[in-house]
Image (cartoon, rainbow, N blue to C red; front, side):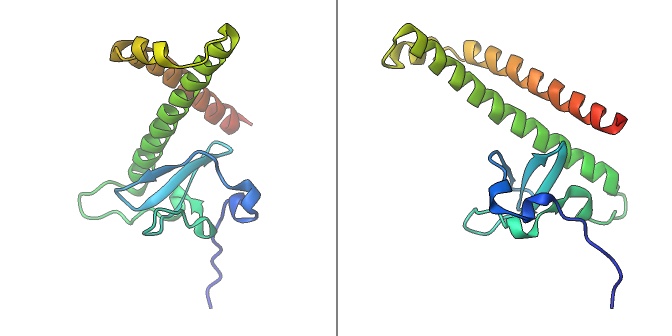
Length: 150
C-alpha cells in the first residue's frame, strides 16, 4: 500500500467550479486552464470533452527526463508558457468582441456590417489583439509574482 498523496485542484470538488476558459493541447491530449494563477490540466476524452474528474497540477504529470531530453522543470515551463499564451490570445479576442459590441450598443448600431469591413484589414485587428494580449500576460505575470511574494 502506497503512502503517496496526489494533489488535486479544487475544480474536482464541484461542477460549479469548472473553468470557463480552457485550452486543448493536441500535443499531449490534455485540456488546460488557469486556477488561482496555477496551470491545471486534465486528460481530454476522444469526443473533445475534458475529464475534469482527473484534473491535477501540471507538475503532477510531467514525464520523466529522457536521455538528452528536457528536464521536468523545462517541460513544465514550456507547457505553462504555451497554455498562458493561448489563454491570453483567446481572452484578448473575447475582450475585443465585447468592446466592439459595447461601442455599437452605445451608438445604436444594429448590425456589425461596418465593423466587419473595418476589421477586415488584419492589421487593425492584429494591433488591438496584440495590445490586449500583452496586457493580459502582464496581469498574469503580476498575479504570479504577487502570489509568490505572499
